[in-house]
Image (cartoon, rainbow, N blue to C red; front, side, top):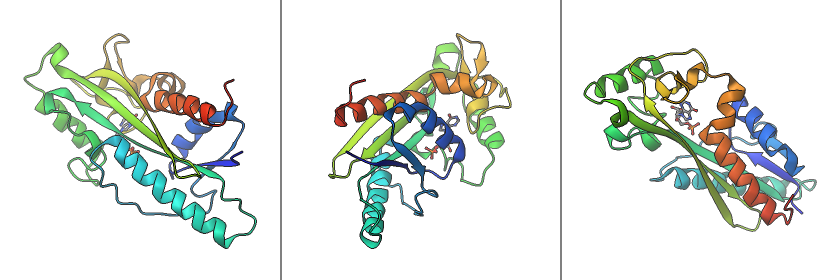
Length: 214
Ligand code: IMP
């Protein structure tokens, strides 16, 4: 039925993870660059799902325009887009959908992470609960949009630790492991991450849509 999946990201790390998880769908999986697409989309939704949906629909529109101008393209593209962030309960869910923009896009994560630790100076144990959230939207060729969500629960550490991962990983502490997500190997993080879970859930939804219940 559908020929290809375009994942709306320019991040190669994300693409690697996406290819690994979606491999058994047996579909061609392209990055924006590989699909010859470029876009600067305003993410003005109020939830992770809304933002993922806005991105997926905008890129699906570009794919249709591309198909119209290229006879070789079938236009049968499923566009996937994600939106993710960190929710800190003690901060009322902040930075949430503003995670990338928190304290300004140019501010280093060393500074952002320090600021979050400082804001939680009065919080103890369970009061430090936090989660990474990832929503993935799939814009199907017929206009339908599917969404899936994945989360990973943890706590804000008392100190930043670890060199792996990116963003808020050094302060995202997993009490059961006694480590932050920045201290996990990439494969270990992928297995339990919000993004891995959301992609897994989306894969099941897509299998259902493609009539393939393997
Ligand atoms: P985006 O969905 O790629 O735009 O990511 C949003 C922001 O959420 C990132 O810039 C990070 O600040 C934060 N974030 C999302 N996922 C992770 C993660 O796995 N580790 C650390 N930070 C993350």
